[in-house]
Length: 359
Image (cartoon, rainbow, N blue to C red; front, side):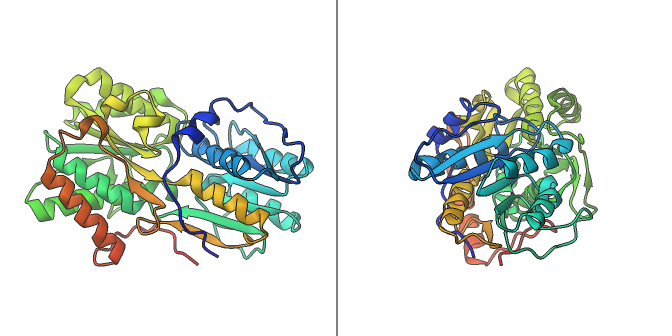
């Protein structure tokens, strides 16, 4: 089953995340359905996927008085199994694990508790080695963010003044490298169509090798990595690293007007304090996807279905240019609109080894 009609994450829902307690409790006295979330590392207010997923949980509760929500926060991967088991023990009817790193943990928990519905964000049922596993009660929420990142890469190539841009990731896992692949292909498209020679530091798409922190929390390492790329001539940074990506934004801010950035997952202009440095963002509509999944579970229609967000269904998107609207030419805007439509109608295919397939 595919949940359709995904829209961009709402600002009000995102704002609600900051007020959530560390282990939120049930407060809907009349609710009969409890949906629970286990975060990835980085915190509930990570300005990225945890925060967006919780916004979706809160939105599901706001839309249906019979649904209540709570979450448990993971500091690291060792917390996944205890938090999943604690959610089972709490009597949760539906449990959402946020992050592809949790896929095997969620799968194991689901197999041991077939009467409970589960979901994986940015992943699908698998074993510890990453091999696919057949389940009846794990819903997969994925996004083909290579598409939105392609548009971001094209914009970066159009906007760079030095002819050099850079990307780096938190960890070398599919939900990260899919952004980097799309970004690289967008740059290549601009070079092909416009006769430019923009260089990308930090990721070799053909070799599938690049720069990674092995952390989604180390903003200091993110800053030092970004400083290195800036010293090598990069004037646009594309961090794919959750909270660690803030390090790129602080590096860009310290570099002055010459260096800017592009965010991922959420519209960084709204979710971070560095909107003045962000040209745009390669978004995925995680909040709405999670909200839809919770409602589908409530309706007993989630099961082992799969949702894949794309440009066509609104699940991924290029965010507005905000403060950079005047800096991006009408020509570039028109080209981005045309490329978007070409991807939607299938005449332009953006491919990544990490791209999910709808089922």
